[in-house]
Length: 470
Image 1 (cartoon, one colour):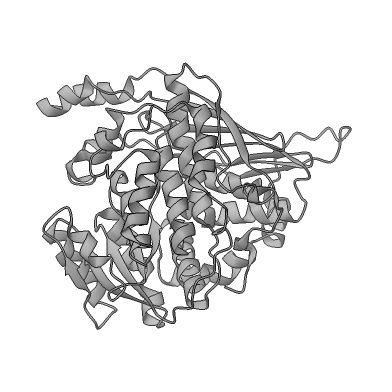
Image 2: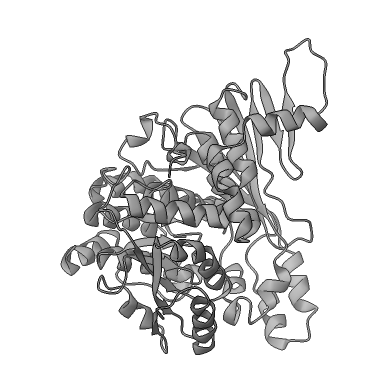
Protein backbone atom coordinates (compact mmCIF):
# COMPACT_ATOMS: atom_id res chain seq x y z
CA UNK A 1 0.00 0.00 0.00
CA UNK A 2 1.47 3.34 -1.06
CA UNK A 3 2.02 6.06 1.52
CA UNK A 4 -0.17 8.39 -0.56
CA UNK A 5 -3.09 5.94 -0.27
CA UNK A 6 -2.51 5.70 3.49
CA UNK A 7 -2.64 9.48 3.80
CA UNK A 8 -5.84 9.61 1.73
CA UNK A 9 -7.48 7.32 4.29
CA UNK A 10 -6.45 9.69 7.07
CA UNK A 11 -7.84 12.69 5.21
CA UNK A 12 -11.12 10.88 4.56
CA UNK A 13 -11.78 10.67 8.29
CA UNK A 14 -10.23 14.06 8.97
CA UNK A 15 -7.84 12.84 11.65
CA UNK A 16 -4.45 13.35 10.02
CA UNK A 17 -1.64 11.70 11.95
CA UNK A 18 -3.03 12.16 15.44
CA UNK A 19 -1.29 9.76 17.78
CA UNK A 20 0.97 9.38 20.81
CA UNK A 21 -1.13 11.08 23.46
CA UNK A 22 -4.55 10.41 24.87
CA UNK A 23 -5.70 13.92 24.06
CA UNK A 24 -4.97 13.53 20.35
CA UNK A 25 -6.85 10.22 20.22
CA UNK A 26 -10.08 11.33 21.91
CA UNK A 27 -13.18 10.15 20.06
CA UNK A 28 -14.68 12.32 17.34
CA UNK A 29 -17.53 14.73 17.85
CA UNK A 30 -19.13 13.41 14.65
CA UNK A 31 -22.77 12.47 15.40
CA UNK A 32 -23.20 8.72 15.49
CA UNK A 33 -25.84 8.86 12.75
CA UNK A 34 -23.10 9.80 10.24
CA UNK A 35 -20.96 6.71 10.70
CA UNK A 36 -22.82 4.61 8.12
CA UNK A 37 -22.30 7.25 5.43
CA UNK A 38 -18.64 7.51 6.48
CA UNK A 39 -18.25 3.74 6.03
CA UNK A 40 -19.94 3.85 2.62
CA UNK A 41 -17.64 6.68 1.55
CA UNK A 42 -14.62 4.75 2.80
CA UNK A 43 -15.44 1.83 0.52
CA UNK A 44 -15.26 -0.93 3.15
CA UNK A 45 -16.11 -4.21 1.38
CA UNK A 46 -15.66 -7.03 3.90
CA UNK A 47 -12.98 -8.55 1.66
CA UNK A 48 -10.60 -9.37 4.55
CA UNK A 49 -13.13 -11.45 6.46
CA UNK A 50 -11.72 -14.87 5.50
CA UNK A 51 -8.30 -13.56 4.54
CA UNK A 52 -5.65 -16.17 3.86
CA UNK A 53 -2.10 -14.93 3.41
CA UNK A 54 0.97 -16.78 2.16
CA UNK A 55 2.32 -19.57 4.37
CA UNK A 56 5.13 -18.60 6.72
CA UNK A 57 7.11 -21.66 7.83
CA UNK A 58 8.81 -19.78 10.68
CA UNK A 59 7.03 -16.60 11.73
CA UNK A 60 9.47 -13.79 12.52
CA UNK A 61 7.99 -11.83 15.41
CA UNK A 62 8.75 -8.25 16.43
CA UNK A 63 7.53 -7.58 19.97
CA UNK A 64 6.70 -3.91 20.48
CA UNK A 65 6.36 -2.94 24.13
CA UNK A 66 8.08 -4.93 26.87
CA UNK A 67 6.07 -4.06 29.96
CA UNK A 68 4.17 -6.66 31.95
CA UNK A 69 2.20 -8.00 29.00
CA UNK A 70 5.07 -7.93 26.53
CA UNK A 71 7.31 -9.86 28.90
CA UNK A 72 4.62 -12.51 29.50
CA UNK A 73 3.98 -12.99 25.78
CA UNK A 74 7.66 -13.88 25.37
CA UNK A 75 6.89 -16.95 27.48
CA UNK A 76 3.83 -17.72 25.33
CA UNK A 77 6.17 -17.99 22.33
CA UNK A 78 8.76 -20.27 23.95
CA UNK A 79 7.37 -23.64 22.80
CA UNK A 80 6.54 -22.28 19.36
CA UNK A 81 10.12 -21.04 18.98
CA UNK A 82 11.60 -24.31 20.21
CA UNK A 83 9.45 -26.27 17.76
CA UNK A 84 10.56 -24.08 14.84
CA UNK A 85 7.19 -22.41 14.25
CA UNK A 86 8.35 -18.91 15.23
CA UNK A 87 11.39 -16.78 16.03
CA UNK A 88 11.59 -13.53 17.98
CA UNK A 89 13.64 -11.37 15.62
CA UNK A 90 13.09 -7.90 17.12
CA UNK A 91 12.13 -6.28 20.41
CA UNK A 92 11.39 -2.64 21.09
CA UNK A 93 10.74 -0.51 24.16
CA UNK A 94 11.62 3.02 25.16
CA UNK A 95 13.05 1.68 28.43
CA UNK A 96 16.51 0.03 28.02
CA UNK A 97 16.08 -1.90 31.28
CA UNK A 98 13.06 -3.70 29.85
CA UNK A 99 15.05 -4.47 26.71
CA UNK A 100 17.73 -6.20 28.77
CA UNK A 101 15.17 -8.15 30.78
CA UNK A 102 13.53 -9.37 27.58
CA UNK A 103 16.87 -10.38 26.08
CA UNK A 104 17.61 -12.54 29.12
CA UNK A 105 14.25 -14.28 28.86
CA UNK A 106 14.64 -14.94 25.15
CA UNK A 107 18.20 -16.22 25.53
CA UNK A 108 16.89 -18.99 27.75
CA UNK A 109 15.22 -20.72 24.78
CA UNK A 110 16.40 -19.04 21.55
CA UNK A 111 19.99 -19.03 20.33
CA UNK A 112 19.69 -16.05 17.99
CA UNK A 113 19.34 -12.77 19.81
CA UNK A 114 16.71 -10.36 18.47
CA UNK A 115 17.60 -6.96 17.08
CA UNK A 116 16.74 -4.26 19.64
CA UNK A 117 15.10 -0.89 19.07
CA UNK A 118 15.00 1.61 21.90
CA UNK A 119 15.75 5.16 22.96
CA UNK A 120 12.80 7.16 21.65
CA UNK A 121 9.04 7.09 21.10
CA UNK A 122 9.66 6.44 17.40
CA UNK A 123 12.18 3.58 17.70
CA UNK A 124 9.48 0.95 17.16
CA UNK A 125 8.97 2.08 13.57
CA UNK A 126 12.37 0.71 12.57
CA UNK A 127 11.33 -2.76 13.75
CA UNK A 128 8.34 -2.83 11.40
CA UNK A 129 10.18 -3.78 8.23
CA UNK A 130 9.66 -6.92 6.18
CA UNK A 131 13.38 -7.70 6.19
CA UNK A 132 13.12 -7.98 9.99
CA UNK A 133 9.71 -9.43 10.82
CA UNK A 134 6.50 -10.96 9.49
CA UNK A 135 4.34 -10.15 12.52
CA UNK A 136 4.22 -7.14 14.82
CA UNK A 137 3.11 -8.15 18.33
CA UNK A 138 1.89 -4.91 19.94
CA UNK A 139 1.91 -4.75 23.75
CA UNK A 140 2.11 -1.02 24.39
CA UNK A 141 -0.25 1.43 26.17
CA UNK A 142 -3.66 1.73 24.53
CA UNK A 143 -3.05 5.01 22.75
CA UNK A 144 -0.40 3.39 20.55
CA UNK A 145 -2.27 0.23 19.50
CA UNK A 146 -4.16 1.41 16.42
CA UNK A 147 -1.33 3.52 15.00
CA UNK A 148 1.17 0.71 15.40
CA UNK A 149 -1.17 -1.85 13.83
CA UNK A 150 -1.84 0.46 10.90
CA UNK A 151 1.89 1.09 10.40
CA UNK A 152 2.66 -2.62 10.55
CA UNK A 153 0.13 -3.45 7.82
CA UNK A 154 1.15 -0.47 5.71
CA UNK A 155 4.75 -1.74 5.89
CA UNK A 156 3.78 -5.27 4.82
CA UNK A 157 3.63 -6.99 8.24
CA UNK A 158 0.72 -8.74 9.89
CA UNK A 159 -0.46 -7.03 13.08
CA UNK A 160 -1.51 -8.56 16.41
CA UNK A 161 -2.44 -6.11 19.15
CA UNK A 162 -3.31 -6.36 22.79
CA UNK A 163 -6.77 -5.12 23.76
CA UNK A 164 -8.35 -2.81 22.90
CA UNK A 165 -7.02 -2.49 19.38
CA UNK A 166 -8.72 0.92 19.09
CA UNK A 167 -10.81 3.28 21.18
CA UNK A 168 -12.02 5.72 18.56
CA UNK A 169 -14.52 5.04 15.78
CA UNK A 170 -12.11 6.45 13.21
CA UNK A 171 -9.33 4.07 14.20
CA UNK A 172 -11.65 1.05 14.01
CA UNK A 173 -12.65 2.01 10.48
CA UNK A 174 -9.09 2.76 9.36
CA UNK A 175 -7.84 -0.60 10.61
CA UNK A 176 -10.41 -2.33 8.42
CA UNK A 177 -9.61 -0.18 5.40
CA UNK A 178 -5.90 -0.84 5.63
CA UNK A 179 -6.35 -4.58 6.22
CA UNK A 180 -8.53 -4.75 3.11
CA UNK A 181 -6.11 -2.65 1.04
CA UNK A 182 -2.94 -4.50 2.08
CA UNK A 183 -4.27 -8.06 2.54
CA UNK A 184 -2.47 -8.23 5.88
CA UNK A 185 -3.94 -9.89 8.95
CA UNK A 186 -4.92 -7.62 11.83
CA UNK A 187 -6.02 -9.45 14.97
CA UNK A 188 -6.86 -8.21 18.44
CA UNK A 189 -5.42 -10.67 20.98
CA UNK A 190 -8.50 -11.39 23.08
CA UNK A 191 -7.27 -14.24 25.27
CA UNK A 192 -10.61 -14.78 27.04
CA UNK A 193 -12.00 -16.23 23.81
CA UNK A 194 -9.65 -19.16 24.44
CA UNK A 195 -10.43 -19.80 28.10
CA UNK A 196 -11.56 -23.29 29.01
CA UNK A 197 -14.97 -22.23 30.39
CA UNK A 198 -15.81 -20.03 27.43
CA UNK A 199 -14.81 -22.70 24.89
CA UNK A 200 -16.86 -25.29 26.80
CA UNK A 201 -19.94 -23.05 26.70
CA UNK A 202 -19.37 -22.33 23.01
CA UNK A 203 -19.21 -26.05 22.27
CA UNK A 204 -22.45 -26.70 24.15
CA UNK A 205 -24.15 -23.89 22.24
CA UNK A 206 -22.99 -25.37 18.94
CA UNK A 207 -24.32 -28.78 20.02
CA UNK A 208 -27.76 -27.31 20.79
CA UNK A 209 -27.66 -27.70 24.56
CA UNK A 210 -28.80 -24.10 25.10
CA UNK A 211 -31.54 -24.15 22.48
CA UNK A 212 -32.36 -20.67 21.19
CA UNK A 213 -30.09 -18.03 22.71
CA UNK A 214 -31.85 -14.89 23.93
CA UNK A 215 -29.64 -12.94 26.36
CA UNK A 216 -26.13 -12.70 27.76
CA UNK A 217 -24.37 -10.72 30.48
CA UNK A 218 -20.66 -10.08 30.49
CA UNK A 219 -18.22 -7.76 32.17
CA UNK A 220 -14.76 -6.73 33.18
CA UNK A 221 -14.97 -6.25 36.96
CA UNK A 222 -11.47 -6.00 38.35
CA UNK A 223 -10.21 -3.77 41.15
CA UNK A 224 -7.22 -2.08 39.50
CA UNK A 225 -6.85 0.92 41.80
CA UNK A 226 -3.53 -0.11 43.29
CA UNK A 227 -2.07 -1.06 39.92
CA UNK A 228 -3.23 2.15 38.26
CA UNK A 229 -1.64 4.18 41.05
CA UNK A 230 1.67 2.30 40.74
CA UNK A 231 4.03 4.36 38.51
CA UNK A 232 5.95 1.20 37.50
CA UNK A 233 3.26 -1.41 36.74
CA UNK A 234 1.53 0.91 34.25
CA UNK A 235 4.56 3.05 33.49
CA UNK A 236 3.94 6.75 34.04
CA UNK A 237 0.43 5.73 35.18
CA UNK A 238 -0.76 5.71 31.57
CA UNK A 239 -3.85 3.65 32.33
CA UNK A 240 -4.96 5.92 35.17
CA UNK A 241 -4.73 8.93 32.86
CA UNK A 242 -7.46 7.50 30.63
CA UNK A 243 -9.84 7.61 33.60
CA UNK A 244 -9.13 11.32 34.01
CA UNK A 245 -10.33 12.10 30.47
CA UNK A 246 -12.90 9.50 29.41
CA UNK A 247 -16.24 8.17 30.68
CA UNK A 248 -17.81 4.98 29.41
CA UNK A 249 -16.74 1.37 28.99
CA UNK A 250 -12.98 1.67 28.50
CA UNK A 251 -12.32 -2.08 28.32
CA UNK A 252 -15.06 -3.96 26.52
CA UNK A 253 -13.47 -7.01 25.03
CA UNK A 254 -12.75 -9.55 27.80
CA UNK A 255 -16.47 -9.99 28.41
CA UNK A 256 -17.88 -9.06 25.02
CA UNK A 257 -15.53 -11.17 22.87
CA UNK A 258 -16.72 -14.58 24.10
CA UNK A 259 -20.38 -13.47 24.02
CA UNK A 260 -19.98 -12.39 20.40
CA UNK A 261 -18.70 -15.90 19.68
CA UNK A 262 -21.71 -17.42 21.48
CA UNK A 263 -24.11 -15.25 19.45
CA UNK A 264 -22.40 -15.76 16.06
CA UNK A 265 -21.79 -12.02 15.82
CA UNK A 266 -20.53 -11.20 12.31
CA UNK A 267 -21.24 -14.83 11.37
CA UNK A 268 -25.04 -14.75 11.15
CA UNK A 269 -25.95 -11.92 13.54
CA UNK A 270 -24.54 -8.49 14.35
CA UNK A 271 -24.64 -5.78 17.00
CA UNK A 272 -27.08 -3.05 15.99
CA UNK A 273 -27.42 -0.47 18.76
CA UNK A 274 -26.53 0.33 22.35
CA UNK A 275 -27.31 2.61 25.25
CA UNK A 276 -24.78 3.24 27.98
CA UNK A 277 -24.91 4.71 31.48
CA UNK A 278 -22.12 5.42 33.94
CA UNK A 279 -22.66 5.66 37.68
CA UNK A 280 -21.20 8.48 39.71
CA UNK A 281 -17.51 8.24 40.48
CA UNK A 282 -16.26 7.76 44.04
CA UNK A 283 -13.96 4.80 44.67
CA UNK A 284 -11.00 5.84 42.51
CA UNK A 285 -10.93 9.50 43.55
CA UNK A 286 -11.18 8.53 47.21
CA UNK A 287 -8.28 6.10 46.79
CA UNK A 288 -6.19 8.83 45.17
CA UNK A 289 -7.13 11.37 47.85
CA UNK A 290 -6.01 8.96 50.58
CA UNK A 291 -2.45 8.68 49.28
CA UNK A 292 0.48 10.80 50.48
CA UNK A 293 1.36 11.71 46.88
CA UNK A 294 0.38 15.28 46.00
CA UNK A 295 0.30 14.51 42.28
CA UNK A 296 -2.16 11.65 42.89
CA UNK A 297 -4.28 13.84 45.13
CA UNK A 298 -4.55 16.34 42.29
CA UNK A 299 -5.44 13.55 39.84
CA UNK A 300 -8.20 12.47 42.20
CA UNK A 301 -9.96 15.76 41.58
CA UNK A 302 -10.04 15.13 37.83
CA UNK A 303 -11.44 11.59 37.53
CA UNK A 304 -14.11 11.49 34.81
CA UNK A 305 -14.91 7.80 34.46
CA UNK A 306 -17.81 6.59 36.59
CA UNK A 307 -17.22 3.68 38.94
CA UNK A 308 -19.62 1.35 37.11
CA UNK A 309 -20.57 1.58 33.45
CA UNK A 310 -23.48 -0.52 32.16
CA UNK A 311 -24.06 -0.82 28.43
CA UNK A 312 -27.09 -2.55 26.91
CA UNK A 313 -26.61 -3.87 23.37
CA UNK A 314 -29.13 -5.19 20.86
CA UNK A 315 -28.51 -7.55 17.94
CA UNK A 316 -30.13 -7.94 14.53
CA UNK A 317 -31.76 -11.20 15.65
CA UNK A 318 -33.32 -9.63 18.72
CA UNK A 319 -30.89 -10.86 21.35
CA UNK A 320 -29.79 -8.61 24.19
CA UNK A 321 -26.43 -8.18 25.93
CA UNK A 322 -25.62 -6.45 29.19
CA UNK A 323 -21.97 -5.37 29.34
CA UNK A 324 -20.41 -3.89 32.49
CA UNK A 325 -17.11 -2.23 33.32
CA UNK A 326 -15.74 -1.47 36.78
CA UNK A 327 -12.07 -1.25 37.74
CA UNK A 328 -12.63 1.20 40.62
CA UNK A 329 -14.67 -0.74 43.17
CA UNK A 330 -13.29 -3.22 45.66
CA UNK A 331 -14.68 -6.63 44.69
CA UNK A 332 -13.48 -10.04 43.48
CA UNK A 333 -12.61 -10.42 39.82
CA UNK A 334 -15.58 -11.32 37.61
CA UNK A 335 -16.47 -11.51 33.91
CA UNK A 336 -20.06 -12.67 34.66
CA UNK A 337 -20.20 -15.01 31.61
CA UNK A 338 -23.98 -15.39 31.79
CA UNK A 339 -25.75 -16.99 28.83
CA UNK A 340 -29.49 -17.66 28.65
CA UNK A 341 -31.19 -19.90 26.13
CA UNK A 342 -34.54 -21.64 25.81
CA UNK A 343 -33.07 -24.93 27.10
CA UNK A 344 -30.19 -24.00 29.40
CA UNK A 345 -28.58 -21.18 31.37
CA UNK A 346 -25.00 -20.62 32.51
CA UNK A 347 -23.77 -18.18 35.17
CA UNK A 348 -20.05 -17.67 35.64
CA UNK A 349 -17.86 -16.94 38.67
CA UNK A 350 -18.27 -19.60 39.85
CA UNK A 351 -19.37 -21.58 36.82
CA UNK A 352 -22.95 -22.85 37.20
CA UNK A 353 -25.06 -24.68 34.64
CA UNK A 354 -28.82 -25.19 34.63
CA UNK A 355 -30.59 -27.50 32.17
CA UNK A 356 -34.27 -26.74 31.63
CA UNK A 357 -36.42 -29.89 31.63
CA UNK A 358 -39.56 -28.03 30.62
CA UNK A 359 -42.20 -25.75 32.22
CA UNK A 360 -43.53 -28.50 34.48
CA UNK A 361 -40.15 -29.69 35.66
CA UNK A 362 -40.12 -27.67 38.85
CA UNK A 363 -36.38 -27.97 39.38
CA UNK A 364 -34.55 -24.79 40.33
CA UNK A 365 -31.06 -26.03 41.18
CA UNK A 366 -27.77 -25.75 39.35
CA UNK A 367 -26.22 -29.01 38.21
CA UNK A 368 -23.73 -30.33 40.74
CA UNK A 369 -21.23 -33.13 41.13
CA UNK A 370 -21.38 -35.89 38.56
CA UNK A 371 -24.24 -34.25 36.65
CA UNK A 372 -22.20 -31.18 35.86
CA UNK A 373 -19.04 -33.22 35.31
CA UNK A 374 -20.87 -35.21 32.67
CA UNK A 375 -21.57 -32.04 30.70
CA UNK A 376 -18.04 -30.79 31.19
CA UNK A 377 -16.54 -34.02 29.92
CA UNK A 378 -18.96 -34.50 27.06
CA UNK A 379 -18.67 -30.94 25.74
CA UNK A 380 -15.05 -30.07 26.45
CA UNK A 381 -13.99 -28.08 23.40
CA UNK A 382 -11.69 -30.14 21.16
CA UNK A 383 -9.23 -27.26 20.81
CA UNK A 384 -8.82 -27.17 24.58
CA UNK A 385 -8.71 -30.98 24.86
CA UNK A 386 -5.88 -31.13 22.37
CA UNK A 387 -3.79 -28.26 23.75
CA UNK A 388 -4.48 -28.24 27.48
CA UNK A 389 -1.63 -30.56 28.44
CA UNK A 390 0.81 -28.65 26.29
CA UNK A 391 -0.31 -25.40 27.88
CA UNK A 392 -0.05 -26.88 31.37
CA UNK A 393 3.41 -28.32 30.74
CA UNK A 394 4.72 -24.93 29.72
CA UNK A 395 2.90 -23.00 32.45
CA UNK A 396 1.47 -20.61 29.91
CA UNK A 397 -0.46 -17.72 31.52
CA UNK A 398 -4.01 -17.24 32.76
CA UNK A 399 -4.73 -20.93 33.16
CA UNK A 400 -3.49 -21.81 29.68
CA UNK A 401 -5.66 -19.55 27.53
CA UNK A 402 -2.76 -17.23 26.63
CA UNK A 403 -0.77 -20.11 25.19
CA UNK A 404 -3.76 -21.46 23.24
CA UNK A 405 -4.32 -17.98 21.79
CA UNK A 406 -0.70 -17.57 20.69
CA UNK A 407 -0.50 -21.15 19.40
CA UNK A 408 -3.56 -20.61 17.19
CA UNK A 409 -2.23 -17.33 15.80
CA UNK A 410 1.23 -18.63 14.89
CA UNK A 411 0.00 -21.95 13.49
CA UNK A 412 -2.59 -20.22 11.28
CA UNK A 413 0.20 -18.06 9.88
CA UNK A 414 2.39 -21.14 9.40
CA UNK A 415 -0.36 -22.91 7.46
CA UNK A 416 -1.60 -19.92 5.49
CA UNK A 417 -5.07 -20.24 7.03
CA UNK A 418 -7.49 -17.50 8.01
CA UNK A 419 -7.25 -16.48 11.67
CA UNK A 420 -9.80 -17.34 14.36
CA UNK A 421 -10.50 -13.64 14.91
CA UNK A 422 -10.26 -11.10 12.11
CA UNK A 423 -9.94 -7.33 11.84
CA UNK A 424 -13.73 -6.90 11.85
CA UNK A 425 -14.08 -8.72 15.18
CA UNK A 426 -11.47 -6.56 16.90
CA UNK A 427 -12.73 -3.35 15.33
CA UNK A 428 -16.36 -4.06 16.33
CA UNK A 429 -15.64 -5.05 19.94
CA UNK A 430 -13.47 -1.96 20.34
CA UNK A 431 -16.05 0.21 18.59
CA UNK A 432 -18.59 -0.65 21.30
CA UNK A 433 -16.33 1.12 23.80
CA UNK A 434 -16.09 4.28 21.69
CA UNK A 435 -19.85 4.35 21.16
CA UNK A 436 -20.50 3.77 24.87
CA UNK A 437 -18.66 7.03 25.50
CA UNK A 438 -20.86 8.76 22.93
CA UNK A 439 -24.01 7.40 24.57
CA UNK A 440 -22.91 8.54 28.02
CA UNK A 441 -22.19 12.02 26.64
CA UNK A 442 -25.66 12.05 25.08
CA UNK A 443 -27.40 11.27 28.37
CA UNK A 444 -27.54 7.52 27.74
CA UNK A 445 -29.28 7.96 24.39
CA UNK A 446 -29.46 5.14 21.87
CA UNK A 447 -26.46 4.99 19.55
CA UNK A 448 -26.61 2.88 16.39
CA UNK A 449 -23.71 0.51 15.72
CA UNK A 450 -22.73 0.68 12.03
CA UNK A 451 -22.15 -2.39 9.89
CA UNK A 452 -18.39 -2.80 9.47
CA UNK A 453 -18.62 -5.73 7.04
CA UNK A 454 -20.69 -4.43 4.08
CA UNK A 455 -23.38 -7.00 4.90
CA UNK A 456 -20.96 -9.94 5.22
CA UNK A 457 -22.21 -10.54 8.79
CA UNK A 458 -25.51 -11.91 7.43
CA UNK A 459 -23.80 -15.07 6.13
CA UNK A 460 -24.07 -17.77 8.81
CA UNK A 461 -20.81 -19.72 9.08
CA UNK A 462 -19.20 -21.83 11.86
CA UNK A 463 -16.72 -19.92 13.96
CA UNK A 464 -13.11 -20.61 12.89
CA UNK A 465 -12.13 -21.54 16.45
CA UNK A 466 -13.94 -24.86 15.89
CA UNK A 467 -11.16 -25.98 13.54
CA UNK A 468 -9.55 -28.44 15.90
CA UNK A 469 -6.84 -29.49 13.45
CA UNK A 470 -4.90 -26.23 13.78
